[in-house]
Length: 289
Image (cartoon, rainbow, N blue to C red; front, side, top):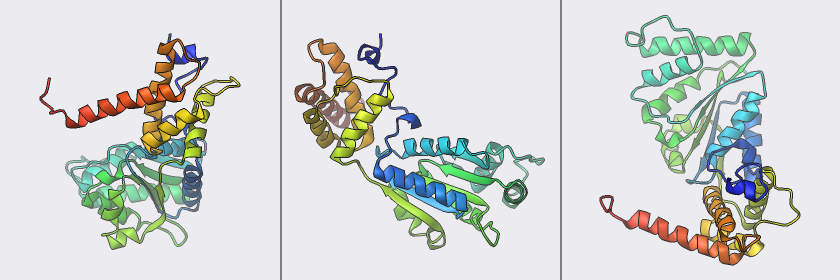
C-alpha cells in the first residue's frame, strides 16, 4: 500500500510532477498568473517570468495552461525544451505544433516563406476567427540569440490595436541578463515578474494546502510547526525543496510506526540524511564506485 493511503490520503501530496491542482497560489504566484491572463486577454505581446531553480516556474506554466484550456478563444502551444539548430527549425516547429498546413518541403523552403505562412495563420486566427494565439516557452534561458531574434520579429506582427501572437517566457534568472542586452527585444516586454521563494507562513500554508488537496480531512496537522520551521530554513522556501523534504518526512512517518505526526525530531533526521546525500552527490567524483 502506498504511504499516502496509510495516512488517509487519496493521492500523493508531495509529488515532484508539476500538477496544477497542487499549485499553492501564494500572493506572488497569484499576482503573476492574474497579470499574465490580463495581458494575454489584452493581446499586449511579451510576458517574462523569471525565477531561480526550484521556485516553481514550470508548475505555474501548467496552471496557466489549465486556465487557457478552459477558454475557447485561446489557441496555445507549450515549448518545454527550446533548443533549435536554426531559425527555420524553430519556425517550422511552430508550423507543426499549431497544425498549420504547409505545402512545401521544409528542406527547400526559405525562412521568409515559413515566416509568411505563420503570419498568415496569425492573421486568420486573430482577425477572422477572433482567437488569441499564445506561445508559452518554459526553460527560456536555453533560447539562442537567433531564436530570440526570431521571437522579436514575430512580435512585430500587429494591428493598430494588438499583437498577433502572445508570448510567455519562463526562465531562470540568467535569461534577464541576456535579454536586457537586446534593447529592441527588452523594450517589447509588457509584463515582467520575478518569482521569489516562499516565506515561512506561506511554506506552512503550502504544506497544509497540498495535504488537504490530497484528500486529508483530519482535524490535526500532519506536520507540527516546529518541524515546518526546520524544513523552511533548510529549503530556504524553495517549493521544489519543500516538496522533496515533505515527501521524505511522510515516508519516514509511516516507517517509524511510533509517531502520529511529523515532529521536529523526525524532520531533523530527514534533513540530515538529505544534506549528507546531497553533499556526497556534489563532492563524489563521477567515476567513483
